[in-house]
Length: 123
Length: 108
Image (cartoon, rainbow over all chains, first blue to last red; front, side, top):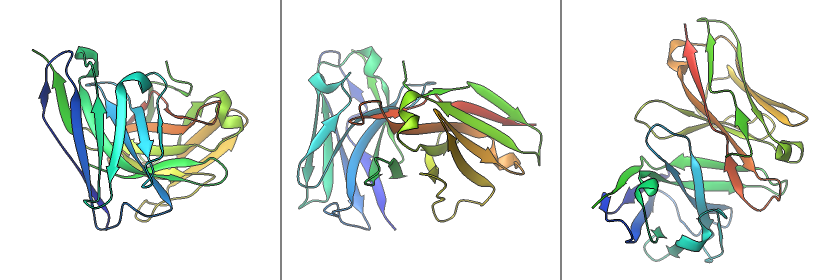
């Protein structure tokens, strides 16, 4: 079965760049049917979509984060990555990666999800 | 602020039926998907689209939609259904993804 696993530093200093990688196993990231997304959840708060990428490299981002976000894909490693620049304490959150399904009607869903990784922004 | 609005908290007696709602203008054009999240765990997809359940999700979970409101119904709520529930869909432009603020379900 498809599994996703986030990896990266758990502590990032303010103003620096947060970098995370999601490794996909049990299936190919090059599937033509899916995007691959990043979602975050600040402690005690709700979910926020960050952005998504297709295996071809096509991306779309949350407008509120777009100026600071870059998502990339490495099909040879079956991985996709997130970079978030100029971080502040407000970026402290659990970061999840997930497979994103879409259909022609605009329906959108995320399944499965990685276990999540907590990233704390602090000096 | 989210373009999808959910009640912060809902409660249900064990074995009874509960409806969790998600409101937003974009829901007039797009179906919602629903996720269950238990403490310390990643969200799990329970319903997507008109009323589709992923493999392994009990059939007591169902979805529906009317106007600007999407609903997740749990028929015969169990103690293990106590969790946070989130909806997601497209935004009004159709170009982005949004999540509702989440509903904490308590099973009494």
